[in-house]
Length: 345
Image (cartoon, rainbow, N blue to C red; front, side):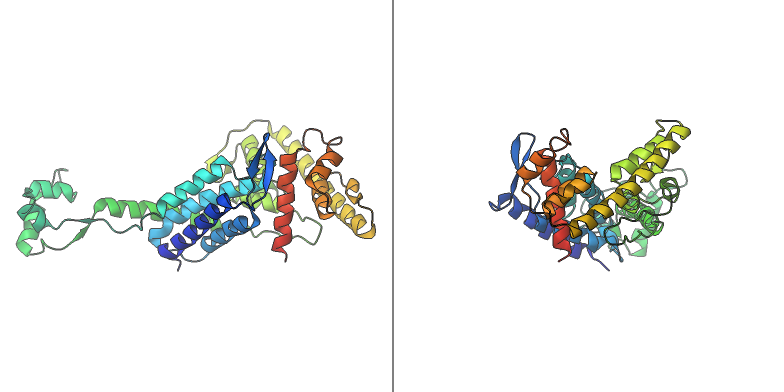
């Protein structure tokens, strides 16, 4: 079972890496919105994944439920940052705000809140039996403080025994309910389809079917080879529930069906084009093999693998993609390629 202390220790380790990254002069700087920013390093990005892997499966100590659910919310922002082509390479504001929420919860280990013993409240604090009943939230059949119950405890000689605060009990019950809802969603997640080398394989289920099964948007995005925002927009257009929230439809069912079909056809064509381009790259020694690819992201990826610099990539693609071939966008994709390469070593 993962304890609160074990998880908190892992969070503090990641925070130490983040602090080191912020002050490391060797961290690469990239251009973003007309200024140089410090890009998230591969080491820090791996540490993020390792932290999430720690809490993604297995039993968790009940007092750690709020901390793990805060980590859930934070990793959602990490995934959005990784999928975005326009986010700050140093991490989005939402990502760091969610991380701050995690850090707040590791500052102090949660411990049961205990009430002062009845004898202490009466003899030292000089509280009346009615006041004690109010503190203990004991009520009679009329909803009033049950002073008689306090007197019965005193007479039984148990007035010095510690008692758990009702507020603490309610908080634990609420956290347990939230945790059960989280666990239910995880149990309903359909296993991700493993892709064959070089050819992204799409899950056979439609997005609508996966949403009906309450599969999280992040998982659907991976299964359908799209970014997470596409899944969220899709659910909103159809008025379906996504990640436990009801979306509002923005188009007619016929319009939606046509868009979904076209999107899935486009993705399959991109996969075929990517596979063909990758094969052509292997068979050809020319450094311009990326021109066989029709997808902007894949062209940047191939040029990165060919050893091109950021400036060379921007210069080579700015005519074909004048709105997208920007230094910041190219730098993000290059960083993702470097992370992929590091993960396969």
